Image 1: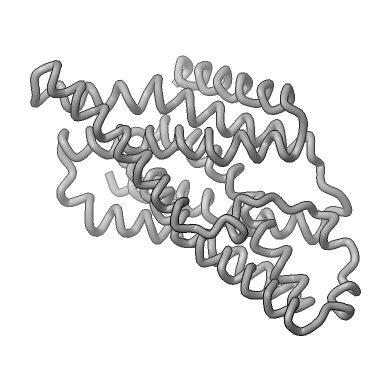
Image 2 (image 1 turned 120 degrees about the horizontal axis):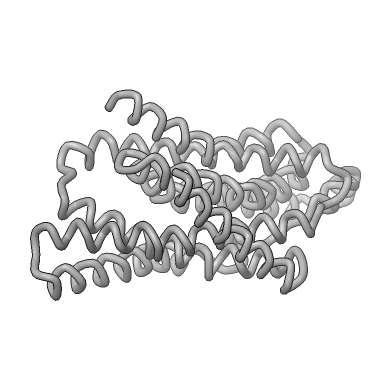
Length: 273
């Protein structure tokens, strides 16, 4: 059991620090590989959607069915699913649209750092505020994602692994969204990188919260709620964030090919494992 806890935590840590990978890509790539990002984000959405409806939702229903009648079990599963959607939608609703971390940035925006010298102080302060606020938003946003990954790993590692990879892909462009405005405001690559990297550590913090606060109380009912809520959260993230971002980076059909590929890989991995 201790090994499973450690592995679940390491998966969550891996998913979280991918914001730092986004910064590295921004600082060391001369141009954005939009096709790769488009397909990758679509792939991540496909993984999340497939695992939500094929594994997480049925698992939640099975957990509730051990305790309640079929009708009540289905009712509680549906309520938990939409409760997860409501939670993540509420978090997004509280984020000002213009400073939302899901507003995409390109590597090309870092191509001419000398431009920072020509900006006025007010614009520099505004950009710094945007970058810092984006980092704070990501901390709030990534906290429940960390719980998602960790608690999935506590229950079933074979489900947690693809979820962790999907969230990691999802965090890469968010890392760029933090680092670009901070770098332009300060001209400091290290500061931009570390703030982007640290914003991702909210995911392992979410894992610690899940382990220290929720783990002692886990039973079939709690797992039923968690699994359905996780499914709702992942479906919302896929439809509201990943697919729009994929289409913004590339072409519609590239995004759809990514989604289908993610579903196919997820189906094969679940059959094999």
